[in-house]
Length: 195
Image (cartoon, rainbow, N blue to C red; front, side):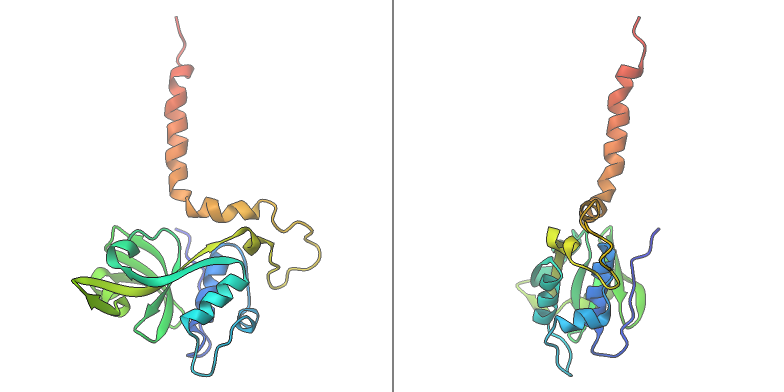
């Protein structure tokens, strides 16, 4: 199994920047903390979800923020940023059978939580029998792949090339096995010799 790209926060106020750096790296772009920090208006008290949204949009991500219920969060198939313990940001990068939640926590590392553990850290509101937590979904746009990442010189004339497709291939990789199996099964009748 390929591990999710992980970045550690250097101080208690960098969790949001570290989360954004991890998601950018997941989609193939390496940005330093300094580069991402310049995009924000964070204060000495930290960063808000609005700051993170602005950074995401500056680097070419389509963002959507809001309160999400448990059934919606278990359907996630690409990494998203969660507001954790009401004072921290982490990345949810995988959900396994609605029972195991894989978190990239810039303060702790790559951590796996059970359903109850996950809920105790993420749930922020309970109303009408529904539990919800704050989430930011991010999806790369074509402009994400045209931005220059850190250390990218003038040598690259066409930064989009096939890297543009990489994000979409990565997002739907679990379906590629089904497609290949379908092609093999579909071509079997033509491979059988006729009499």
